[in-house]
Image (cartoon, rainbow, N blue to C red; front, top):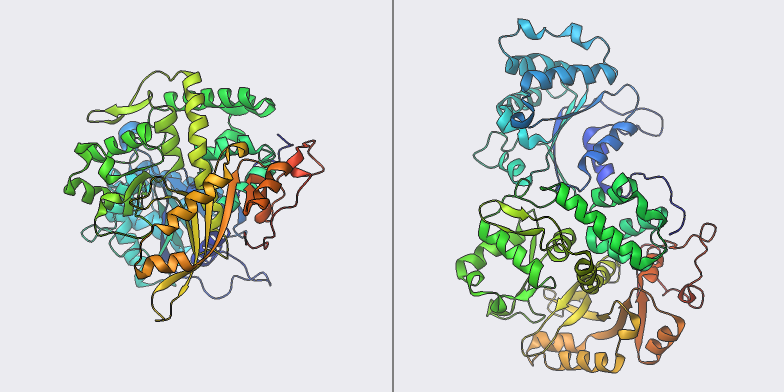
Length: 559
């Protein structure tokens, strides 16, 4: 691994600009904030680990001087015993630190108020918002148990009545998305009580690669694939790897096999020690049958499986309906992918786990993360590390398909990309498929103009190009004879091979067989990222000396 840079805040530029505007905290080029600020309540969504708190602390650091910016975490009242009065006192202390010196002397003392709810609702919150403070309530999913939801609603309603008189802002966010979302349902107190809605997703691949290049791990494409298989675009997991003591010993290991074994051992320790670490029931509440499906897929079919091939208990129409609802909700734990040419018979649709970390944990550590009746995941002591390594090696092959699709999805030349595309009557599927869609002659239907067919192999020597070409030809020849199939058959085709790395010999062979070879370093360069900083690296792999990256625009991969 090359020399690492200090950890910093990565990506999120569009979200940051959106929050700057919503919170009215970005000064203009002349040092002014513009017109008078007005009250607003912002609702910030994002799964646990997507970096919501880090995003807001970054904005807090970047806020102009003189603008009080307060982040208050709501505690779990059951485990901490804290109540509204404790939270209100914390708010006042943080307001003093944020620059509102003496604020406690300008509100009624807690002891002179009828109760703590009144103190929060009628005294402290209005005073802070009148002074223009940005108040962020983190872990707001605890608000119902704390009895604060109605109080926050009343504060919002009062400030909305005279927005200029209360120029401050309220930001509400929480890690338990189901509890958090329930506060805004049509029958809930906060229904229509937000002036802005911002959703935080996982990092896109270009951001992950920018970070990995700075942190020095991208110079080792095999290690990068392992980490991407385990973490996907989850910021908290990547930050833990590079900054936590639990993983510090890994950064000096040069031998990739030794590194992978010790990395999996460290991840197993984290998962075992933190029994509710990622997708367990404390954070994502699912019916037992749905969680069993996720665990079954992780244990048995991490690449996904057709509905018709699921075990009988998962094939009922009602279960399918509930599963499709789960695939469409904000949690995005499952995906349903249909064949390239959709059929009325949905039995050939494929169901698969959407999230990289969930696949990683349920597949590699299946002895640790296993079904537990009535409580979601049951945690057992350990998984044999040799078995975990074997599973990880196999899983990385599937992960590379998703990595390739993520790369293509950021291309300006591609309308969509996906992996594992099947078609009834054809044995096997296309590892990676993407298309540039245009309007048809009728001006309504979107038809493919150009398509990319990709074969993905972790080891470049495993590509059998003649067999791959024959399969791709057969796949499209057997799509059928209807109008939609003909549009796909008539589109311009480009054939691509994806691997962790290609040497010059394999790259030349691919070109002679009509394929473009793209490896992980090519993907990085497609984003304008140099995976091996010359001044910092002694890496001398042949594949990074003897070939040029594909011709790609700096704004994204163009092939």
